Image 1 (cartoon, one colour):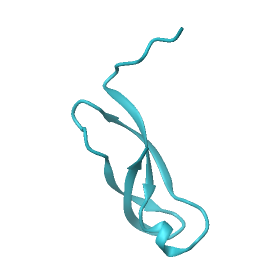
Image 2 (cartoon, one colour):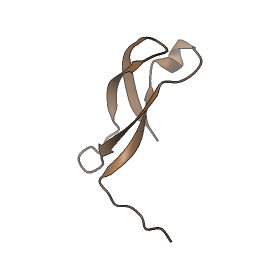
Image 3 (tube, rainbow, N blue to C red):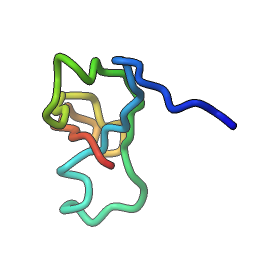
Image 4 (cartoon, rainbow, N blue to C red):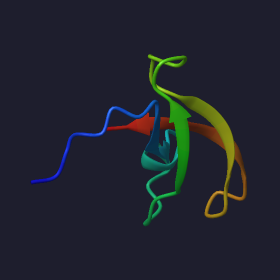
Length: 62
């Protein structure tokens, strides 16, 4: 049986907040890691959205 991991660094998915409101098909998502002990809130970064062709706010999902 696999042990539960208690590592501090976990993978998170960032999804664009402006893309859903634009009505265009597809999604802009990035995968990154964060330190769970230092950053307890959901991550929010400004990343490039290739569909909208501009930098937008991407928020952590799940």
